[in-house]
Length: 253
Length: 346
Image 1 (cartoon, chains in turn brown, green):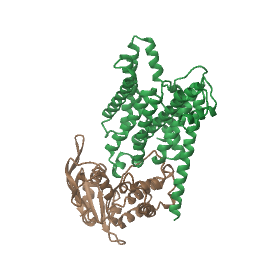
Image 2 (image 1 turned 90 degrees about the vertical axis):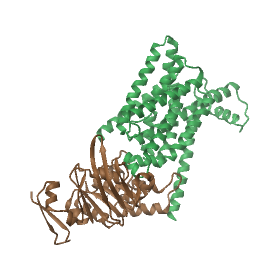
Image 3 (image 1 turned 60 degrees about the vertical axis):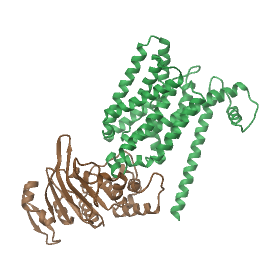
Image 4 (image 1 turned 30 degrees about the vertical axis):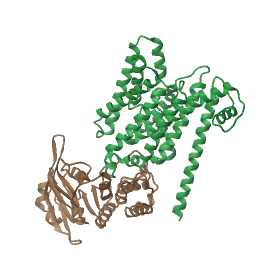
């Protein structure tokens, strides 16, 4: 077991954003969350990370209701990479990554070698080791994103939730990031727009449309020409890639 | 091994810096104590202080000794603590609201404290220093709750809190003016206006005892929350995702800043811009991490306020300028620079 959502409903004002969404992430696997703009992906991720409480339904982490767990306890398990996380404090890369150790330290405990180790390995994995002393304001968009990912990894999470993490990244870093997440020994839930990347790297896919789950399962079962037309309003042909045998989408127009 | 070595080195450097800073505060206080209508040499100043705390027993002019110990030293020390407290409050609010313009003065807490104090003095609700402080306290917390309510408790965005603060400032400043202008007593109104702009004139050892206790407690709580404040760098949601209990942290830290501000305003009037200017200068010197920033703010604020107090007494002979005039004259140009840079960045 890992994260499980059970018939969650979420409203902003009078508008219902999510209608009874249920899903279950397989331990150690990568779950891709797809859907057009405004389909409720970000709201769903926030509920799964415990940042908001659903108006109905619940999130279960290994069978425990997330809203019954303390914030710090949740943060030791679940790391969240937001879509637009900006700051006006000119923190160094290493200081941002060190923030990831926050849930593992009490108010009085000092920095330990274990903390150092987690930060070092996170920096290396995200490829930010050499820029560790650079100030936030001097980083490119991609470097900022990779710093956030390093910060999330420093939390030593067992569940990693990412909201469109490949935005702002060039193709090398997009592929690099997807591979990095796919190879991590953690359960990951990742919202994304690139359907080919989703097909290549994700173990499972869920498609949201207007706040409801319209498809879920293996990429080859979920990504159909019919679904692409119905949900994304595009005509496409899908074939198994001759190179990696995952589905590959050719957009027609 | 090298890591342990560098850590010991860091501690040594931190302790060295703290000692140097305390030295600087002591020198500023010493200079402040020496300056006044009755000039007293630094050596006499030093001896008078060591006499009183029992380290020496040099024969000194009794008037000199009394002036130094009972009037000027308490005044300089209160100034130092007030500067430290205002700078600390500014740093906390800027971090929590993620807005470079936040400080108790801008958020209306100082204005609320003034209204409370003025209501006590002019409307005559009670009498004496204790009730004036109580009025300032009540006013500061009234402003605090007004801002909290208007910005939708702890859930409103930081922009809303700033706007609510602006509204609170207007409301409470207007209330203060209303009370002052409708009071029949012209002399009283004049005294109040002078007090509103800030003055260290009346402070003695009892004030020092109160402000040092409140500020000491405030500083300890803020330092315990230093890492929490760092976690707010990317916003409330990011802090929450890192395991911070955002609602509780904000309430505790706002309450601590309101308590410090109320104590200070009730003693010396509302002094603006220290809470704005000093944290930015300190951030420039020691960086944005709060475990270093907060002590730096306290020390820089203390030095700044003691120097401002010296300037307020020394700029015009035979006359004391309100301290708020001095801090504003330094603060407004600095405020403009921040606004200008903020505009360009966004």
